[in-house]
Image 1 (cartoon, rainbow, N blue to C red):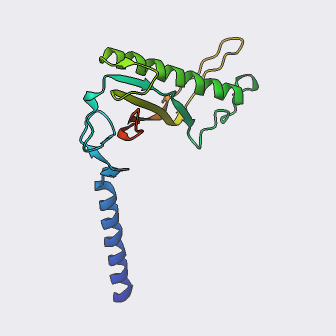
Image 2: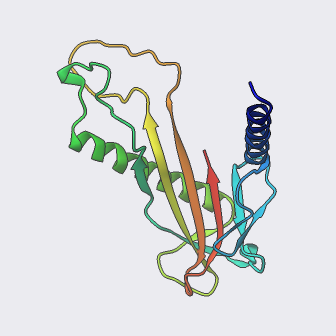
Length: 179
């Protein structure tokens, strides 16, 4: 290898290492729509409006949760038998059932935390908007005649995105993301 090619190879290697080092040291964005990332050890990311006073809210409105499957999720991959295949109705039932479950859980937790759940906006009312994105179910259960067992190494994955907004102005006060 000539000296010129050796120097070019060394430079390319150093540049690759520098770029890789930068990519792995960045924990994610520090700001999102004017919200500033807060340190948190329990959740993947918490963003808060610098002047937000969330404890001053006494009431909450819980918006219906939205649920989105992962782009690459194919529940019928892997040779599932025709009786266990999921159709559009099955997938809609999964989304609706999970959205209802998320709404129920948030309602229970917020009431236990001292918030009153209301249906009308007001000056002391927070709008809670839950969403599940990137839902990937490893072995969705379908009802079928007979016995069957499915074994998996993982149940799947999903990411919860939660927005907190002022119910009157619509201003986003906080956003939480957790996988």
